[in-house]
Amino acid sequence: MKYKFNIISLLILILQLFLLSGCINLREDYPEINYYTLSNTSNKESREKVFGILQVRNFSAPVALAGQRIMVQDYDGSSQRLYYHRWSDNFDQLFTWLAISRLSEQKIFSGGVVSQNTNLVPNYILEGEILNLNAFNHKIPDSSFVELSVKFSLLGYNADSSNFILYFTNSYKQKVMRNNAKPNSIPRAVNTAANDIIEKMTIDIINNINQ
View 1 (spheres, rainbow, N blue to C red):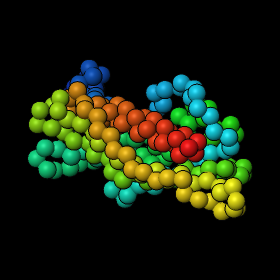
View 2 (tube, rainbow, N blue to C red):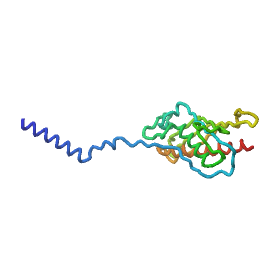
View 3 (tube, helix red, strand yellow):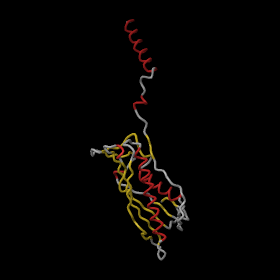
View 4 (cartoon, rainbow, N blue to C red):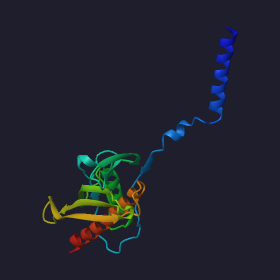
């Protein structure tokens, strides 16, 4: 009995020393989840001005882009949703707020830019749909890219009517190359593509209203 007790005590002591030595580190077994957002890359005020308030309605997106996990397509034709690299919110929501942020900081509209939750009556309404977001990992890492496609429609009041009319609708596609095929290069490239698309859309908004 005493021999059995000594064996048990020895095993407990060995286990304690093993744990204290740091040989077991559960945190290293589970990498940290990285969250990404979209940010405005230009706060330059526009020289062109438009009278009135612009309302930006929430952008829509296909079911394939729903959720926060980033979808990646590999060169062998397979695709996967990344677990440790995610958007901080649904991508359509991030794009909506990026559009509001850029248009607000450029100070194009005299009455400002508001979301669809406002109680203000807008002079113009911007609607959008994210058509596609493709993150592609090429066999040659620095040939990897992202491609973003978005459709915009601008509505506004007719001077002779209380109804909204369609000023213009257009689709934009932007491809941005990545320096490598690592997951963290995807959000940076998507952010560049999103800002470039909104910049092109902004120019079309001004031209169609002021023509």
